[in-house]
Length: 257
Image 1: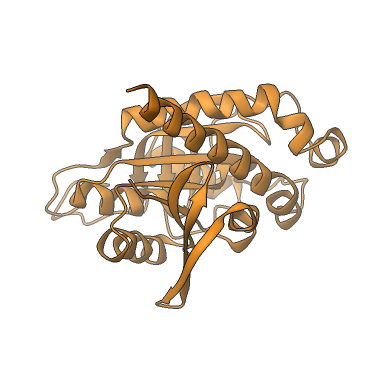
Image 2: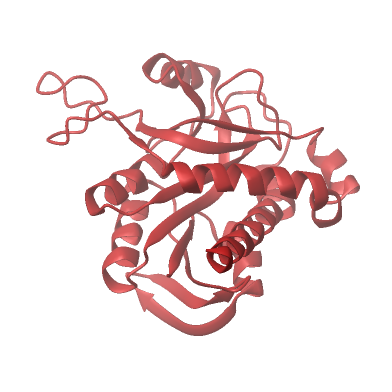
């Protein structure tokens, strides 16, 4: 079974691409799809670019042309819950598009014609991602991220939660923007720009989906860490560490059956 792995930024995909035993590289729509083996599993890795349209187009191509049987999206997000800190991990439970508003034809947030306002991550993938993220924090974080980088980036005792994620085509960079998203999607733990769109594509194609996000900031005015530095020095290492453990567990579970 081939798994599609998506990221929104090239830095998030860099270490995964470096570890991948590549078989082919195919360019379509300005994106490079890397097919190969990682941790004993066949995957297709792609940097989708930011935003809902870019992510949705990439997901559909993974499904149609690469015949992936599931998709994992990994990357960063801004915290909406006040108890989340830089370096914490959110594994998606349900995904929302906080900027969907086709009223008065449809209720606020409802996806036209689908009669739903949110999409569930596949429960088995969700639970395995959580377990693998916890394993990464226990036995890989110190070696793969490092105490010095953690201190520089303000990461202290990171943890993993399962929570809702809100997506929209706007970088949330102010307190007012954050509160606006929270008012629309009160259950959301964090906000990003792609997951809800990929979730809709997977829902319409009956493809299992998992999303795992690392908190890079508080989605507001007070960011104290350079975003690019965090993605390069922390988020990319989180992504590689979690995904390798996830794929290794997939292979182990398959062998045990």
